[in-house]
Amino acid sequence: MVSQRIIEKIFVVCSLLFFSGAGSYFIAPANHLYLLVQIVANIIQIVTILLIGIRWKKIVPFVIKEKLLWILVGLTVASTLWSELPFMAALFHDHGPGAGVIPFIRVTLFGVYFAASYGLKEQMQLLTWTFGAAVLLSIVVALGLPHYGVTGSMVFLEEDARHAGAWRGLYTHKNLFGIIMVLSAMVFRLVHIHHNRWIAWTGFILSIALILLSTSKTALILLLTFLCLLPLYKALRWNYNLAVPFFIALILIGGGMATLFLENAATILGALGRDLTFTGRTDIWSGVVNKIWERPWLGYGYHTFWLSVTDGTIDVWSPTINRFMILPHAHNGFLDLSLDIGLLGLFLFMFSYVKVSLQAIQYLRLNQSSEGILPLAYLLFMVQFNLSEPSLMREDIYWILYVSLTLSLQNFNSLVKHHTSYRRQAETQVTATIR
Image (cartoon, rainbow, N blue to C red; front, side, top):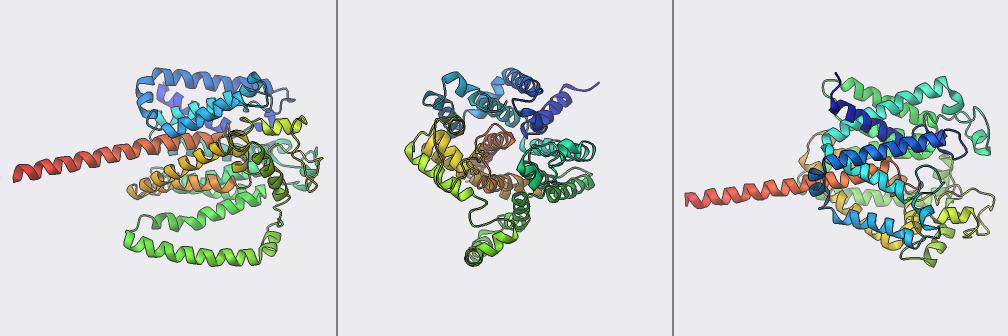
Protein backbone atom coordinates (compact mmCIF):
# COMPACT_ATOMS: atom_id res chain seq x y z
CA MET A 1 0.00 0.00 0.00
CA VAL A 2 1.32 3.44 -0.97
CA SER A 3 2.06 5.53 2.09
CA GLN A 4 0.60 8.98 2.67
CA ARG A 5 4.10 10.49 2.49
CA ILE A 6 4.68 9.04 -1.01
CA ILE A 7 1.30 10.35 -2.22
CA GLU A 8 2.20 13.79 -0.86
CA LYS A 9 5.54 13.74 -2.67
CA ILE A 10 3.78 12.83 -5.93
CA PHE A 11 1.48 15.82 -5.35
CA VAL A 12 4.55 18.06 -4.85
CA VAL A 13 6.28 16.83 -8.02
CA CYS A 14 3.14 17.21 -10.15
CA SER A 15 2.53 20.70 -8.73
CA LEU A 16 6.11 21.84 -9.37
CA LEU A 17 5.87 20.49 -12.92
CA PHE A 18 2.60 22.41 -13.40
CA PHE A 19 4.08 25.66 -12.04
CA SER A 20 7.13 25.25 -14.28
CA GLY A 21 4.79 25.87 -17.23
CA ALA A 22 4.61 22.26 -18.44
CA GLY A 23 1.70 21.73 -20.81
CA SER A 24 1.39 25.50 -21.17
CA TYR A 25 0.09 25.20 -24.75
CA PHE A 26 -3.30 24.92 -23.05
CA ILE A 27 -3.02 28.08 -20.95
CA ALA A 28 -4.25 30.48 -23.63
CA PRO A 29 -7.81 31.60 -22.77
CA ALA A 30 -9.01 30.73 -26.28
CA ASN A 31 -8.05 27.09 -25.83
CA HIS A 32 -10.84 24.69 -24.89
CA LEU A 33 -8.65 23.15 -22.17
CA TYR A 34 -8.09 26.51 -20.47
CA LEU A 35 -10.86 25.77 -17.97
CA LEU A 36 -9.23 22.42 -17.11
CA VAL A 37 -5.94 24.19 -16.37
CA GLN A 38 -7.77 26.60 -14.05
CA ILE A 39 -9.40 23.66 -12.25
CA VAL A 40 -6.01 21.98 -11.74
CA ALA A 41 -4.56 25.25 -10.35
CA ASN A 42 -7.46 25.58 -7.92
CA ILE A 43 -7.16 21.96 -6.78
CA ILE A 44 -3.46 22.52 -6.03
CA GLN A 45 -4.36 25.64 -4.07
CA ILE A 46 -7.04 23.88 -2.00
CA VAL A 47 -4.78 20.89 -1.19
CA THR A 48 -1.92 23.23 -0.26
CA ILE A 49 -4.13 25.22 2.12
CA LEU A 50 -5.42 22.00 3.70
CA LEU A 51 -1.87 20.68 4.24
CA ILE A 52 -0.78 24.01 5.73
CA GLY A 53 -3.87 24.01 7.97
CA ILE A 54 -3.10 20.51 9.26
CA ARG A 55 0.46 21.57 10.18
CA TRP A 56 -0.14 25.19 11.16
CA LYS A 57 1.45 24.77 14.61
CA LYS A 58 4.72 23.79 12.95
CA ILE A 59 4.49 26.15 9.98
CA VAL A 60 3.63 29.43 11.72
CA PRO A 61 6.80 29.55 13.89
CA PHE A 62 8.77 28.42 10.82
CA VAL A 63 7.67 31.31 8.59
CA ILE A 64 7.10 34.14 11.05
CA LYS A 65 10.80 34.95 11.41
CA GLU A 66 11.18 36.03 7.78
CA LYS A 67 9.50 39.45 8.05
CA LEU A 68 11.07 41.05 4.96
CA LEU A 69 9.57 38.46 2.62
CA TRP A 70 6.08 39.07 4.03
CA ILE A 71 6.45 42.85 3.72
CA LEU A 72 7.24 42.28 0.03
CA VAL A 73 4.26 39.96 -0.42
CA GLY A 74 2.04 42.43 1.49
CA LEU A 75 3.08 45.27 -0.83
CA THR A 76 2.18 43.12 -3.83
CA VAL A 77 -1.28 42.36 -2.44
CA ALA A 78 -1.80 46.01 -1.46
CA SER A 79 -0.98 47.12 -5.03
CA THR A 80 -4.53 46.12 -6.01
CA LEU A 81 -5.63 49.31 -4.21
CA TRP A 82 -3.86 51.60 -6.71
CA SER A 83 -4.07 49.29 -9.73
CA GLU A 84 -5.40 50.62 -13.03
CA LEU A 85 -7.64 47.54 -13.15
CA PRO A 86 -10.87 47.12 -11.16
CA PHE A 87 -10.25 45.43 -7.80
CA MET A 88 -11.61 41.97 -8.76
CA ALA A 89 -9.81 42.01 -12.11
CA ALA A 90 -6.53 42.81 -10.34
CA LEU A 91 -7.06 39.86 -8.01
CA PHE A 92 -7.60 37.42 -10.85
CA HIS A 93 -7.81 38.30 -14.54
CA ASP A 94 -7.76 36.64 -17.94
CA HIS A 95 -4.10 37.20 -18.74
CA GLY A 96 -3.75 33.44 -18.38
CA PRO A 97 -4.76 31.08 -15.53
CA GLY A 98 -1.75 32.11 -13.51
CA ALA A 99 -1.94 35.89 -13.56
CA GLY A 100 -3.09 38.24 -10.81
CA VAL A 101 -2.70 38.55 -7.07
CA ILE A 102 -4.67 35.39 -6.20
CA PRO A 103 -2.42 33.11 -8.30
CA PHE A 104 0.60 34.91 -6.81
CA ILE A 105 -0.66 34.09 -3.31
CA ARG A 106 -1.23 30.51 -4.48
CA VAL A 107 2.41 29.94 -5.46
CA THR A 108 3.65 31.79 -2.38
CA LEU A 109 1.64 29.46 -0.15
CA PHE A 110 3.00 26.47 -2.05
CA GLY A 111 6.53 27.76 -1.44
CA VAL A 112 5.73 28.04 2.29
CA TYR A 113 4.36 24.49 2.37
CA PHE A 114 7.36 23.16 0.40
CA ALA A 115 9.89 24.77 2.76
CA ALA A 116 8.07 23.84 5.98
CA SER A 117 7.37 20.22 5.03
CA TYR A 118 10.74 19.26 3.56
CA GLY A 119 14.33 20.03 4.51
CA LEU A 120 16.70 21.50 1.94
CA LYS A 121 18.14 18.09 1.08
CA GLU A 122 14.69 16.57 0.53
CA GLN A 123 13.58 19.58 -1.51
CA MET A 124 16.52 18.99 -3.85
CA GLN A 125 15.63 15.31 -4.20
CA LEU A 126 12.05 16.24 -5.14
CA LEU A 127 13.40 18.66 -7.74
CA THR A 128 15.30 15.80 -9.40
CA TRP A 129 11.99 13.93 -9.75
CA THR A 130 10.32 17.05 -11.17
CA PHE A 131 12.97 17.81 -13.76
CA GLY A 132 13.44 14.14 -14.57
CA ALA A 133 9.74 14.06 -15.50
CA ALA A 134 10.11 17.31 -17.49
CA VAL A 135 13.06 15.89 -19.46
CA LEU A 136 11.46 12.53 -20.27
CA LEU A 137 8.00 13.90 -21.09
CA SER A 138 9.50 16.64 -23.28
CA ILE A 139 11.37 14.03 -25.30
CA VAL A 140 8.19 11.95 -25.66
CA VAL A 141 6.12 14.97 -26.76
CA ALA A 142 8.75 16.28 -29.20
CA LEU A 143 9.15 12.87 -30.87
CA GLY A 144 5.58 11.60 -30.59
CA LEU A 145 3.61 14.86 -30.93
CA PRO A 146 5.86 17.26 -32.88
CA HIS A 147 2.83 19.46 -33.51
CA TYR A 148 3.20 20.49 -29.85
CA GLY A 149 6.81 19.69 -29.01
CA VAL A 150 8.68 21.22 -31.97
CA THR A 151 8.41 24.82 -33.15
CA GLY A 152 7.21 25.28 -36.72
CA SER A 153 5.48 21.93 -37.19
CA MET A 154 2.44 24.10 -37.84
CA VAL A 155 3.15 27.76 -38.60
CA PHE A 156 0.79 30.31 -37.05
CA LEU A 157 3.17 33.21 -36.43
CA GLU A 158 6.23 34.64 -38.17
CA GLU A 159 8.25 33.54 -35.14
CA ASP A 160 7.18 29.91 -35.69
CA ALA A 161 8.70 29.97 -39.16
CA ARG A 162 11.85 31.76 -37.95
CA HIS A 163 12.54 29.14 -35.26
CA ALA A 164 11.27 26.10 -37.18
CA GLY A 165 12.80 22.88 -35.87
CA ALA A 166 13.62 24.22 -32.38
CA TRP A 167 12.40 21.91 -29.64
CA ARG A 168 10.08 23.26 -26.95
CA GLY A 169 9.02 19.98 -25.33
CA LEU A 170 6.22 20.48 -22.80
CA TYR A 171 6.47 24.28 -23.02
CA THR A 172 5.03 27.01 -25.23
CA HIS A 173 8.33 28.59 -26.28
CA LYS A 174 11.83 27.34 -26.94
CA ASN A 175 13.36 29.93 -24.57
CA LEU A 176 11.10 28.90 -21.69
CA PHE A 177 11.93 25.26 -22.40
CA GLY A 178 15.67 26.01 -22.61
CA ILE A 179 15.72 27.89 -19.29
CA ILE A 180 13.86 25.07 -17.52
CA MET A 181 16.41 22.62 -18.93
CA VAL A 182 19.26 24.78 -17.56
CA LEU A 183 17.69 24.52 -14.11
CA SER A 184 17.32 20.78 -14.70
CA ALA A 185 21.02 20.49 -15.63
CA MET A 186 22.00 22.38 -12.46
CA VAL A 187 19.93 20.10 -10.24
CA PHE A 188 21.19 16.87 -11.82
CA ARG A 189 24.79 18.09 -11.71
CA LEU A 190 24.71 19.04 -8.02
CA VAL A 191 22.17 16.83 -6.24
CA HIS A 192 23.54 13.55 -4.94
CA ILE A 193 21.32 10.55 -5.77
CA HIS A 194 22.31 7.77 -3.37
CA HIS A 195 23.88 4.73 -5.06
CA ASN A 196 22.62 5.89 -8.49
CA ARG A 197 25.05 8.47 -9.82
CA TRP A 198 24.34 7.21 -13.34
CA ILE A 199 20.81 8.62 -13.02
CA ALA A 200 22.19 12.06 -12.17
CA TRP A 201 24.67 12.01 -15.05
CA THR A 202 22.02 10.77 -17.50
CA GLY A 203 19.67 13.58 -16.44
CA PHE A 204 22.50 16.10 -16.74
CA ILE A 205 23.51 14.96 -20.26
CA LEU A 206 19.91 14.79 -21.50
CA SER A 207 19.24 18.28 -20.12
CA ILE A 208 22.23 19.67 -22.04
CA ALA A 209 21.11 17.88 -25.21
CA LEU A 210 17.64 19.44 -24.91
CA ILE A 211 19.16 22.89 -24.37
CA LEU A 212 21.03 22.48 -27.65
CA LEU A 213 17.89 21.22 -29.42
CA SER A 214 15.94 24.23 -28.14
CA THR A 215 18.44 26.50 -29.96
CA SER A 216 17.91 29.04 -27.16
CA LYS A 217 20.97 31.32 -26.99
CA THR A 218 19.83 32.62 -23.58
CA ALA A 219 19.71 29.09 -22.16
CA LEU A 220 23.11 28.23 -23.65
CA ILE A 221 24.71 31.30 -22.05
CA LEU A 222 23.10 30.43 -18.70
CA LEU A 223 24.43 26.87 -18.92
CA LEU A 224 27.98 27.97 -19.80
CA THR A 225 27.92 30.54 -16.98
CA PHE A 226 26.88 27.87 -14.49
CA LEU A 227 29.64 25.50 -15.61
CA CYS A 228 32.27 28.27 -15.49
CA LEU A 229 31.18 29.34 -11.99
CA LEU A 230 31.34 25.85 -10.47
CA PRO A 231 35.03 26.16 -9.45
CA LEU A 232 34.29 29.61 -7.97
CA TYR A 233 31.49 28.26 -5.79
CA LYS A 234 33.93 25.70 -4.41
CA ALA A 235 36.51 28.45 -3.81
CA LEU A 236 34.07 30.08 -1.37
CA ARG A 237 34.81 27.18 0.97
CA TRP A 238 38.51 28.00 1.12
CA ASN A 239 40.21 29.58 4.08
CA TYR A 240 39.85 33.37 3.93
CA ASN A 241 43.62 33.77 3.56
CA LEU A 242 43.38 31.95 0.24
CA ALA A 243 39.90 33.06 -0.83
CA VAL A 244 40.47 36.84 -0.56
CA PRO A 245 43.54 37.01 -2.90
CA PHE A 246 41.85 34.58 -5.28
CA PHE A 247 38.72 36.72 -5.65
CA ILE A 248 40.74 39.94 -5.95
CA ALA A 249 42.63 38.36 -8.86
CA LEU A 250 39.32 37.15 -10.30
CA ILE A 251 37.84 40.66 -10.18
CA LEU A 252 40.88 42.05 -12.01
CA ILE A 253 40.66 39.35 -14.69
CA GLY A 254 36.89 39.84 -14.96
CA GLY A 255 37.37 43.59 -15.40
CA GLY A 256 39.82 42.98 -18.22
CA MET A 257 37.45 40.56 -19.94
CA ALA A 258 34.54 43.01 -19.56
CA THR A 259 36.63 45.72 -21.22
CA LEU A 260 37.50 43.34 -24.05
CA PHE A 261 33.82 42.45 -24.48
CA LEU A 262 32.74 46.11 -24.63
CA GLU A 263 35.37 46.87 -27.28
CA ASN A 264 34.19 43.94 -29.43
CA ALA A 265 30.52 43.81 -28.40
CA ALA A 266 29.08 44.03 -31.92
CA THR A 267 31.21 41.13 -33.19
CA ILE A 268 30.56 38.90 -30.16
CA LEU A 269 26.80 39.53 -30.12
CA GLY A 270 26.64 39.00 -33.88
CA ALA A 271 28.18 35.55 -33.44
CA LEU A 272 25.39 34.76 -30.95
CA GLY A 273 22.69 35.99 -33.31
CA ARG A 274 22.17 39.23 -31.36
CA ASP A 275 22.87 42.90 -31.94
CA LEU A 276 23.70 45.89 -29.73
CA THR A 277 19.97 46.43 -29.10
CA PHE A 278 19.61 42.80 -27.90
CA THR A 279 17.06 42.12 -30.65
CA GLY A 280 15.17 45.35 -29.99
CA ARG A 281 15.06 44.93 -26.21
CA THR A 282 16.94 48.15 -25.44
CA ASP A 283 14.31 50.16 -27.35
CA ILE A 284 11.59 48.57 -25.20
CA TRP A 285 13.62 49.15 -22.02
CA SER A 286 14.01 52.85 -22.85
CA GLY A 287 10.24 53.30 -23.21
CA VAL A 288 9.56 51.28 -20.04
CA VAL A 289 12.03 53.31 -17.95
CA ASN A 290 10.18 56.49 -18.94
CA LYS A 291 6.92 54.92 -17.75
CA ILE A 292 8.50 53.81 -14.47
CA TRP A 293 9.45 57.43 -13.72
CA GLU A 294 5.83 58.50 -14.20
CA ARG A 295 4.83 56.33 -11.19
CA PRO A 296 8.16 55.55 -9.53
CA TRP A 297 7.43 54.58 -5.93
CA LEU A 298 4.48 52.18 -5.98
CA GLY A 299 4.15 51.33 -9.67
CA TYR A 300 0.99 50.57 -11.60
CA GLY A 301 -0.20 47.55 -9.60
CA TYR A 302 0.66 43.89 -9.87
CA HIS A 303 0.28 42.53 -13.44
CA THR A 304 -1.48 45.71 -14.55
CA PHE A 305 0.83 47.72 -16.79
CA TRP A 306 1.02 45.46 -19.85
CA LEU A 307 -2.71 44.74 -19.80
CA SER A 308 -3.26 48.49 -19.92
CA VAL A 309 -0.83 48.74 -22.86
CA THR A 310 -2.74 46.01 -24.70
CA ASP A 311 -6.14 47.68 -24.28
CA GLY A 312 -4.74 51.12 -25.12
CA THR A 313 -5.11 52.69 -21.65
CA ILE A 314 -1.34 53.24 -21.41
CA ASP A 315 0.90 54.20 -24.33
CA VAL A 316 4.46 52.88 -24.09
CA TRP A 317 5.32 53.30 -27.75
CA SER A 318 8.21 55.31 -29.09
CA PRO A 319 9.47 55.95 -32.66
CA THR A 320 11.94 53.05 -32.29
CA ILE A 321 9.32 50.50 -31.17
CA ASN A 322 7.20 48.80 -33.80
CA ARG A 323 3.59 49.54 -32.88
CA PHE A 324 2.51 46.20 -34.31
CA MET A 325 4.73 44.28 -31.89
CA ILE A 326 2.95 42.25 -29.21
CA LEU A 327 4.53 43.32 -25.93
CA PRO A 328 3.37 41.11 -23.03
CA HIS A 329 6.32 42.17 -20.85
CA ALA A 330 9.52 44.26 -20.78
CA HIS A 331 11.91 41.34 -21.43
CA ASN A 332 13.51 42.20 -18.08
CA GLY A 333 12.35 40.98 -14.67
CA PHE A 334 13.67 43.99 -12.76
CA LEU A 335 11.87 46.49 -15.01
CA ASP A 336 8.62 44.53 -14.82
CA LEU A 337 8.88 44.35 -11.03
CA SER A 338 9.35 48.15 -10.93
CA LEU A 339 6.27 48.57 -13.12
CA ASP A 340 4.27 46.27 -10.81
CA ILE A 341 5.18 47.54 -7.33
CA GLY A 342 7.50 50.46 -7.96
CA LEU A 343 11.06 51.22 -6.95
CA LEU A 344 10.04 50.58 -3.33
CA GLY A 345 9.20 46.99 -4.27
CA LEU A 346 12.41 46.63 -6.29
CA PHE A 347 14.48 47.89 -3.33
CA LEU A 348 12.75 45.48 -0.91
CA PHE A 349 13.34 42.56 -3.27
CA MET A 350 17.02 43.41 -3.77
CA PHE A 351 17.51 43.78 -0.01
CA SER A 352 15.85 40.38 0.51
CA TYR A 353 17.94 38.87 -2.30
CA VAL A 354 21.26 40.06 -0.84
CA LYS A 355 20.26 38.74 2.60
CA VAL A 356 19.32 35.31 1.22
CA SER A 357 22.50 35.16 -0.90
CA LEU A 358 24.68 35.75 2.15
CA GLN A 359 22.82 32.96 3.95
CA ALA A 360 23.34 30.72 0.89
CA ILE A 361 27.10 31.39 1.08
CA GLN A 362 27.08 30.41 4.75
CA TYR A 363 25.14 27.24 3.88
CA LEU A 364 27.67 26.45 1.12
CA ARG A 365 30.58 26.80 3.57
CA LEU A 366 28.90 24.56 6.17
CA ASN A 367 27.67 21.91 3.70
CA GLN A 368 30.72 20.42 1.99
CA SER A 369 28.74 18.27 -0.47
CA SER A 370 27.93 19.40 -4.02
CA GLU A 371 24.31 19.96 -2.89
CA GLY A 372 25.53 22.82 -0.70
CA ILE A 373 26.25 24.79 -3.89
CA LEU A 374 22.71 24.61 -5.32
CA PRO A 375 20.99 27.43 -3.33
CA LEU A 376 23.64 30.01 -4.30
CA ALA A 377 23.83 28.69 -7.87
CA TYR A 378 20.04 29.02 -8.20
CA LEU A 379 20.03 32.58 -6.84
CA LEU A 380 22.68 33.69 -9.36
CA PHE A 381 20.86 31.86 -12.17
CA MET A 382 17.59 33.60 -11.26
CA VAL A 383 19.11 37.08 -11.47
CA GLN A 384 20.98 36.32 -14.67
CA PHE A 385 18.01 35.09 -16.72
CA ASN A 386 15.83 37.94 -15.45
CA LEU A 387 18.10 40.34 -17.31
CA SER A 388 16.32 39.28 -20.51
CA GLU A 389 13.21 37.41 -19.31
CA PRO A 390 10.49 38.51 -16.84
CA SER A 391 10.22 36.09 -13.93
CA LEU A 392 10.71 38.02 -10.69
CA MET A 393 7.83 37.52 -8.26
CA ARG A 394 5.70 35.79 -10.87
CA GLU A 395 3.26 32.93 -10.46
CA ASP A 396 5.74 30.21 -11.36
CA ILE A 397 8.28 27.70 -10.09
CA TYR A 398 11.01 30.34 -9.82
CA TRP A 399 9.14 32.29 -7.14
CA ILE A 400 8.23 29.04 -5.34
CA LEU A 401 11.92 28.13 -5.15
CA TYR A 402 12.86 31.64 -3.99
CA VAL A 403 10.27 31.52 -1.18
CA SER A 404 11.32 28.02 -0.11
CA LEU A 405 15.03 28.93 -0.14
CA THR A 406 14.42 32.14 1.78
CA LEU A 407 12.53 30.33 4.55
CA SER A 408 14.75 27.22 4.60
CA LEU A 409 18.03 29.15 4.73
CA GLN A 410 16.65 31.51 7.39
CA ASN A 411 15.74 28.58 9.62
CA PHE A 412 18.92 26.65 8.81
CA ASN A 413 21.08 29.60 9.84
CA SER A 414 18.96 30.20 12.95
CA LEU A 415 19.55 26.59 14.00
CA VAL A 416 23.28 26.92 13.34
CA LYS A 417 23.49 30.09 15.44
CA HIS A 418 21.45 28.49 18.23
CA HIS A 419 23.67 25.39 18.19
CA THR A 420 26.84 27.51 18.17
CA SER A 421 25.56 29.68 21.01
CA TYR A 422 24.55 26.61 23.03
CA ARG A 423 27.95 24.98 22.44
CA ARG A 424 29.81 28.11 23.51
CA GLN A 425 27.64 28.43 26.61
CA ALA A 426 28.35 24.79 27.52
CA GLU A 427 32.08 25.30 27.00
CA THR A 428 32.00 28.39 29.25
CA GLN A 429 30.18 26.47 31.99
CA VAL A 430 32.69 23.59 31.78
CA THR A 431 35.59 26.03 31.97
CA ALA A 432 34.05 27.78 34.99
CA THR A 433 33.48 24.44 36.72
CA ILE A 434 37.12 23.39 36.16
CA ARG A 435 38.37 26.65 37.57
